Length: 54
Image (tube, rainbow, N blue to C red):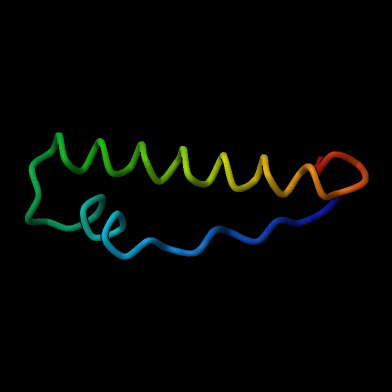
């Protein structure tokens, strides 16, 4: 099984997702965007692994 490194942090999204000075809706949206970004990155990397990445 291939280990995929965690994606690099996007400073603006990371701050918005986990910073205390943002509204709950903004934090929720930023966390969703971080999850989508990580999924898309892993999906792209899976295309380049012989076993499909799993």
